[in-house]
Length: 387
Picture (tube, rainbow, N blue to C red):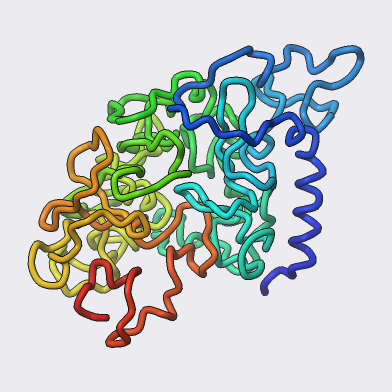
């Protein structure tokens, strides 16, 4: 049963109340500079004792201190619910994942789930981060999960424990070192200070999420310096992929290792497959995946697979920021050229990571992708002859 718009509004009002003090501290100016690791006075983010003149120093005035001496949680910095997708404090620009700006950043906007922005509240529009958007009342286990690994039935991962950077047991988040054995935000601890930025190719043994693409442990890629606040064919994130998908699973190539949960080859699609394995992997004993091999026909749309260099796919040669592709070598800079036969389709070619204004976090309205209808964009960027 879908949760009501009224309940979403109540949660949103509570969120804004908690964040109001923090929001008043930020300027909405955007300087256009390149952003890397956090800089400036430590006191902008941290408090030693959560007390000054007998008053708490947390941004929501809570007497209960936060982990790692922080003045705010992930939401307090990155989900203020304001009018801008970028806010600044001191020398640092902070990307927002919950806002009403007309521009959304690369991963999308959780505000579509609550109805703060877009065509109306809906759980199906994104990943429900329970503390921010409320518990998902449509799904429990992640769709496409592999039941033998506890993903399909929600034993390990479910929509009530999903968080930004790990729950009280250091797991069930996306950012940081999942299953690090440390509680709460400790899985992402230190990442803001070691964030390298630009082209990222972390070592397979590296446990510092700050060395990985957008703090997604083990993921490789190129980070656009303004999180795609501005975009063009030559101004965007670059993603890493494979020319052929692998057989992923605990009995084959596993995403579980001594250094935490990570994609075996560092691709974005493999990262998504750590929860949604059926949608991304070649069939194995526990999953029928996309099919028995990487050759059409498929039973599910493939990812980590190079676009064919022939037929309808050969027409996709200029990078489209609404249908991003992945490179099979770690990108060092954005490129406006797409090379069929090499560049690969990935999960983010069709979906946003956080949320969008369309069901299933899609980048476009799937109901308007009508074969033979003369449409453009969306599916027809790759399937160029089917419009």
